[in-house]
Length: 314
Image (cartoon, rainbow, N blue to C red; front, side, top):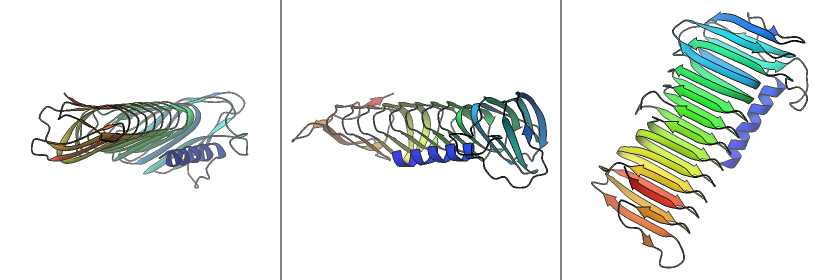
Protein backbone atom coordinates (compact mmCIF):
# COMPACT_ATOMS: atom_id res chain seq x y z
CA UNK A 1 0.00 0.00 0.00
CA UNK A 2 2.84 2.44 0.83
CA UNK A 3 4.50 1.96 -2.56
CA UNK A 4 1.21 2.59 -4.37
CA UNK A 5 0.52 5.79 -2.46
CA UNK A 6 4.02 7.17 -2.99
CA UNK A 7 3.75 6.38 -6.69
CA UNK A 8 0.66 8.54 -7.14
CA UNK A 9 2.24 11.32 -5.08
CA UNK A 10 5.30 11.40 -7.31
CA UNK A 11 3.15 11.34 -10.43
CA UNK A 12 1.09 14.35 -9.32
CA UNK A 13 4.19 16.38 -8.49
CA UNK A 14 5.96 15.61 -11.74
CA UNK A 15 2.91 16.22 -13.94
CA UNK A 16 1.93 19.45 -12.29
CA UNK A 17 5.36 20.99 -11.92
CA UNK A 18 6.97 19.90 -15.15
CA UNK A 19 3.98 21.17 -17.17
CA UNK A 20 1.89 18.81 -19.26
CA UNK A 21 1.83 18.99 -23.04
CA UNK A 22 -1.64 20.16 -23.98
CA UNK A 23 -3.50 19.48 -27.20
CA UNK A 24 -4.24 22.26 -29.62
CA UNK A 25 -7.18 24.29 -28.41
CA UNK A 26 -9.37 27.12 -29.62
CA UNK A 27 -9.08 28.65 -26.16
CA UNK A 28 -6.46 31.21 -25.14
CA UNK A 29 -4.08 30.67 -22.22
CA UNK A 30 -4.11 33.29 -19.47
CA UNK A 31 -0.74 34.70 -18.34
CA UNK A 32 -0.20 36.76 -15.19
CA UNK A 33 3.17 38.26 -16.07
CA UNK A 34 5.14 39.90 -13.27
CA UNK A 35 2.03 40.75 -11.22
CA UNK A 36 -0.93 38.70 -10.04
CA UNK A 37 -3.99 38.84 -12.25
CA UNK A 38 -7.68 38.64 -11.36
CA UNK A 39 -9.49 35.81 -13.15
CA UNK A 40 -12.90 36.22 -14.79
CA UNK A 41 -13.69 33.87 -17.66
CA UNK A 42 -16.51 31.61 -18.85
CA UNK A 43 -16.49 28.61 -21.19
CA UNK A 44 -19.48 26.61 -22.52
CA UNK A 45 -19.64 22.89 -21.72
CA UNK A 46 -22.25 20.15 -21.85
CA UNK A 47 -24.02 19.25 -18.61
CA UNK A 48 -22.12 15.97 -18.16
CA UNK A 49 -18.82 17.12 -19.63
CA UNK A 50 -15.40 16.29 -18.27
CA UNK A 51 -13.44 19.00 -16.41
CA UNK A 52 -9.83 18.67 -15.29
CA UNK A 53 -8.15 21.21 -13.03
CA UNK A 54 -4.52 21.36 -11.90
CA UNK A 55 -2.84 23.77 -9.50
CA UNK A 56 0.59 23.60 -7.88
CA UNK A 57 0.27 26.02 -4.97
CA UNK A 58 -2.61 28.02 -3.53
CA UNK A 59 -6.20 26.76 -3.55
CA UNK A 60 -8.87 25.26 -5.80
CA UNK A 61 -12.59 25.60 -5.02
CA UNK A 62 -15.15 23.92 -7.28
CA UNK A 63 -18.91 24.26 -6.77
CA UNK A 64 -21.69 22.69 -8.82
CA UNK A 65 -24.47 24.72 -10.42
CA UNK A 66 -27.19 24.29 -13.04
CA UNK A 67 -25.65 26.34 -15.86
CA UNK A 68 -24.17 24.69 -19.03
CA UNK A 69 -20.90 26.50 -18.59
CA UNK A 70 -17.77 26.76 -16.47
CA UNK A 71 -17.21 30.09 -14.76
CA UNK A 72 -13.75 30.89 -13.44
CA UNK A 73 -12.88 33.49 -10.80
CA UNK A 74 -10.01 33.91 -8.39
CA UNK A 75 -6.46 35.15 -8.81
CA UNK A 76 -3.57 33.89 -10.95
CA UNK A 77 -0.21 34.18 -9.20
CA UNK A 78 2.58 36.32 -10.63
CA UNK A 79 4.80 34.45 -13.08
CA UNK A 80 2.14 31.80 -13.73
CA UNK A 81 0.14 30.80 -16.78
CA UNK A 82 -3.26 29.15 -16.79
CA UNK A 83 -3.17 26.74 -19.73
CA UNK A 84 -6.66 26.27 -21.19
CA UNK A 85 -7.64 23.53 -23.64
CA UNK A 86 -10.63 21.46 -24.62
CA UNK A 87 -14.00 21.86 -26.26
CA UNK A 88 -17.73 21.71 -25.57
CA UNK A 89 -17.49 18.28 -23.93
CA UNK A 90 -14.15 18.62 -22.13
CA UNK A 91 -12.24 21.45 -20.48
CA UNK A 92 -8.71 21.35 -19.08
CA UNK A 93 -7.42 24.15 -16.82
CA UNK A 94 -3.87 23.82 -15.55
CA UNK A 95 -1.62 26.30 -13.74
CA UNK A 96 2.04 26.21 -14.71
CA UNK A 97 5.08 28.44 -14.49
CA UNK A 98 6.40 30.37 -17.46
CA UNK A 99 9.86 29.02 -16.55
CA UNK A 100 11.15 25.66 -17.76
CA UNK A 101 12.82 22.81 -15.91
CA UNK A 102 11.92 20.20 -13.33
CA UNK A 103 9.80 20.84 -10.28
CA UNK A 104 12.79 21.96 -8.24
CA UNK A 105 13.09 25.07 -10.41
CA UNK A 106 9.98 25.60 -12.46
CA UNK A 107 7.22 25.69 -9.83
CA UNK A 108 5.26 28.93 -9.56
CA UNK A 109 6.69 31.35 -6.99
CA UNK A 110 3.26 32.76 -6.04
CA UNK A 111 -0.03 31.21 -4.95
CA UNK A 112 -2.93 30.88 -7.39
CA UNK A 113 -6.56 30.72 -6.26
CA UNK A 114 -9.00 29.10 -8.68
CA UNK A 115 -12.72 29.46 -7.95
CA UNK A 116 -14.90 27.50 -10.37
CA UNK A 117 -18.61 26.97 -10.92
CA UNK A 118 -19.23 23.88 -13.05
CA UNK A 119 -22.30 21.88 -14.16
CA UNK A 120 -23.57 19.79 -11.27
CA UNK A 121 -23.49 16.57 -13.32
CA UNK A 122 -19.98 17.11 -14.69
CA UNK A 123 -17.20 14.53 -14.40
CA UNK A 124 -14.49 16.28 -12.39
CA UNK A 125 -10.80 15.62 -11.76
CA UNK A 126 -8.70 17.94 -9.58
CA UNK A 127 -4.94 17.53 -9.03
CA UNK A 128 -3.04 19.81 -6.66
CA UNK A 129 0.41 19.80 -5.07
CA UNK A 130 0.86 22.40 -2.28
CA UNK A 131 -2.72 23.56 -2.54
CA UNK A 132 -5.99 22.90 -0.74
CA UNK A 133 -8.91 21.51 -2.75
CA UNK A 134 -12.59 22.08 -1.94
CA UNK A 135 -15.38 20.46 -3.95
CA UNK A 136 -19.10 20.86 -3.25
CA UNK A 137 -22.48 20.07 -4.84
CA UNK A 138 -21.22 17.70 -7.53
CA UNK A 139 -23.25 14.57 -8.37
CA UNK A 140 -21.79 13.43 -11.66
CA UNK A 141 -20.71 9.96 -12.70
CA UNK A 142 -17.25 10.26 -11.17
CA UNK A 143 -15.08 12.56 -9.07
CA UNK A 144 -11.31 12.35 -8.54
CA UNK A 145 -9.22 14.58 -6.29
CA UNK A 146 -5.48 14.15 -5.75
CA UNK A 147 -3.29 16.21 -3.41
CA UNK A 148 0.30 16.02 -2.21
CA UNK A 149 0.42 18.36 0.80
CA UNK A 150 -2.86 20.27 0.76
CA UNK A 151 -6.08 19.40 2.59
CA UNK A 152 -9.02 17.99 0.62
CA UNK A 153 -12.64 18.78 1.51
CA UNK A 154 -15.40 17.16 -0.54
CA UNK A 155 -19.19 17.29 -0.21
CA UNK A 156 -20.53 15.32 -3.16
CA UNK A 157 -23.10 12.79 -4.30
CA UNK A 158 -20.93 11.54 -7.18
CA UNK A 159 -21.49 7.86 -7.86
CA UNK A 160 -17.77 7.02 -7.97
CA UNK A 161 -15.21 8.94 -5.88
CA UNK A 162 -11.43 8.60 -5.71
CA UNK A 163 -9.65 10.81 -3.15
CA UNK A 164 -5.86 10.66 -2.69
CA UNK A 165 -3.65 12.69 -0.37
CA UNK A 166 -0.10 12.33 0.92
CA UNK A 167 0.25 14.61 3.94
CA UNK A 168 -3.00 16.58 3.83
CA UNK A 169 -6.20 15.61 5.64
CA UNK A 170 -9.28 14.41 3.77
CA UNK A 171 -12.85 15.28 4.74
CA UNK A 172 -15.51 13.56 2.65
CA UNK A 173 -19.25 14.01 3.15
CA UNK A 174 -22.06 12.59 1.04
CA UNK A 175 -25.42 14.41 1.33
CA UNK A 176 -27.18 11.05 1.71
CA UNK A 177 -26.08 7.43 1.92
CA UNK A 178 -26.22 5.86 -1.56
CA UNK A 179 -26.04 2.03 -1.49
CA UNK A 180 -25.04 2.00 -5.18
CA UNK A 181 -22.06 4.35 -4.70
CA UNK A 182 -18.34 3.62 -4.55
CA UNK A 183 -15.66 5.57 -2.64
CA UNK A 184 -11.92 5.00 -2.31
CA UNK A 185 -9.88 7.27 -0.03
CA UNK A 186 -6.18 6.90 0.69
CA UNK A 187 -3.54 8.97 2.48
CA UNK A 188 -0.01 8.56 3.78
CA UNK A 189 0.04 10.74 6.92
CA UNK A 190 -3.21 12.66 6.52
CA UNK A 191 -6.34 11.86 8.52
CA UNK A 192 -9.55 10.63 6.87
CA UNK A 193 -12.94 11.87 8.05
CA UNK A 194 -15.96 10.49 6.17
CA UNK A 195 -19.72 10.80 6.62
CA UNK A 196 -22.72 9.15 4.93
CA UNK A 197 -20.67 6.90 2.68
CA UNK A 198 -22.43 3.73 1.59
CA UNK A 199 -22.19 0.94 -0.96
CA UNK A 200 -18.56 -0.03 -1.66
CA UNK A 201 -15.98 1.75 0.51
CA UNK A 202 -12.21 1.45 0.75
CA UNK A 203 -10.16 3.52 3.21
CA UNK A 204 -6.36 3.30 3.42
CA UNK A 205 -3.74 5.22 5.39
CA UNK A 206 -0.20 4.69 6.63
CA UNK A 207 0.05 6.83 9.77
CA UNK A 208 -3.12 8.92 9.64
CA UNK A 209 -6.24 8.24 11.65
CA UNK A 210 -9.58 7.42 10.04
CA UNK A 211 -13.17 7.71 11.12
CA UNK A 212 -16.22 6.91 9.04
CA UNK A 213 -19.87 7.22 10.02
CA UNK A 214 -21.07 5.03 7.17
CA UNK A 215 -24.53 3.99 6.05
CA UNK A 216 -25.40 0.58 4.61
CA UNK A 217 -22.34 -1.04 3.04
CA UNK A 218 -22.01 -3.96 0.63
CA UNK A 219 -18.20 -3.89 0.76
CA UNK A 220 -15.99 -2.19 3.33
CA UNK A 221 -12.22 -2.42 3.44
CA UNK A 222 -9.91 -0.43 5.72
CA UNK A 223 -6.16 -0.70 6.14
CA UNK A 224 -3.59 1.21 8.21
CA UNK A 225 -0.07 0.81 9.52
CA UNK A 226 -0.04 2.95 12.66
CA UNK A 227 -3.23 5.01 12.43
CA UNK A 228 -6.35 4.30 14.50
CA UNK A 229 -9.69 3.51 12.83
CA UNK A 230 -13.16 4.29 14.21
CA UNK A 231 -15.83 2.92 11.87
CA UNK A 232 -19.61 2.80 12.10
CA UNK A 233 -21.42 0.74 9.47
CA UNK A 234 -24.54 -1.30 8.74
CA UNK A 235 -23.72 -4.39 6.67
CA UNK A 236 -26.13 -5.19 3.87
CA UNK A 237 -27.21 -8.78 3.30
CA UNK A 238 -24.19 -10.75 2.02
CA UNK A 239 -21.88 -7.78 2.73
CA UNK A 240 -18.15 -8.30 3.14
CA UNK A 241 -16.20 -6.21 5.66
CA UNK A 242 -12.45 -6.47 6.15
CA UNK A 243 -10.57 -4.18 8.56
CA UNK A 244 -6.88 -4.54 9.33
CA UNK A 245 -4.09 -2.65 11.08
CA UNK A 246 -0.48 -3.18 12.07
CA UNK A 247 -0.11 -1.10 15.24
CA UNK A 248 -3.21 1.09 15.16
CA UNK A 249 -6.39 0.42 17.12
CA UNK A 250 -9.66 -0.58 15.42
CA UNK A 251 -13.10 0.22 16.78
CA UNK A 252 -16.03 -1.07 14.73
CA UNK A 253 -19.61 -0.08 15.62
CA UNK A 254 -22.30 -2.46 14.33
CA UNK A 255 -26.11 -2.45 14.61
CA UNK A 256 -27.88 -4.39 17.36
CA UNK A 257 -29.81 -6.23 14.61
CA UNK A 258 -26.56 -7.53 13.07
CA UNK A 259 -26.64 -10.78 11.11
CA UNK A 260 -23.08 -11.83 10.33
CA UNK A 261 -20.22 -14.26 10.73
CA UNK A 262 -17.38 -12.59 12.63
CA UNK A 263 -13.70 -13.55 12.52
CA UNK A 264 -11.53 -11.19 14.60
CA UNK A 265 -8.00 -11.57 15.92
CA UNK A 266 -5.12 -9.65 17.48
CA UNK A 267 -1.49 -10.74 17.74
CA UNK A 268 -0.54 -8.79 20.86
CA UNK A 269 -3.38 -6.30 21.43
CA UNK A 270 -6.61 -6.74 23.34
CA UNK A 271 -9.94 -7.80 21.76
CA UNK A 272 -13.28 -6.74 23.24
CA UNK A 273 -16.63 -7.60 21.69
CA UNK A 274 -20.33 -7.05 22.33
CA UNK A 275 -20.97 -9.96 19.92
CA UNK A 276 -19.58 -12.99 21.72
CA UNK A 277 -16.63 -13.44 24.05
CA UNK A 278 -13.07 -13.26 22.76
CA UNK A 279 -10.68 -16.09 23.66
CA UNK A 280 -7.04 -15.61 24.58
CA UNK A 281 -4.63 -17.60 22.45
CA UNK A 282 -3.34 -20.78 24.03
CA UNK A 283 0.25 -20.00 23.13
CA UNK A 284 1.52 -16.45 23.08
CA UNK A 285 -0.25 -13.11 23.41
CA UNK A 286 -3.30 -11.92 21.54
CA UNK A 287 -6.92 -12.98 21.28
CA UNK A 288 -9.38 -14.25 18.69
CA UNK A 289 -13.11 -14.42 18.15
CA UNK A 290 -15.08 -16.58 15.75
CA UNK A 291 -18.82 -16.36 16.09
CA UNK A 292 -22.09 -16.12 14.22
CA UNK A 293 -24.64 -13.45 15.02
CA UNK A 294 -28.22 -13.97 13.84
CA UNK A 295 -28.45 -15.81 10.52
CA UNK A 296 -24.85 -14.97 9.63
CA UNK A 297 -25.67 -13.13 6.41
CA UNK A 298 -22.58 -10.88 6.22
CA UNK A 299 -18.87 -11.73 6.55
CA UNK A 300 -16.83 -9.54 8.92
CA UNK A 301 -13.07 -9.90 9.34
CA UNK A 302 -11.04 -7.72 11.72
CA UNK A 303 -7.29 -8.20 12.14
CA UNK A 304 -4.75 -6.21 14.18
CA UNK A 305 -1.10 -7.01 14.86
CA UNK A 306 -0.19 -4.94 17.92
CA UNK A 307 -3.26 -2.69 18.09
CA UNK A 308 -6.43 -3.25 20.09
CA UNK A 309 -9.78 -4.27 18.54
CA UNK A 310 -13.24 -3.35 19.79
CA UNK A 311 -16.51 -4.58 18.28
CA UNK A 312 -19.31 -2.47 19.70
CA UNK A 313 -23.10 -2.66 19.44
CA UNK A 314 -24.66 0.65 18.37
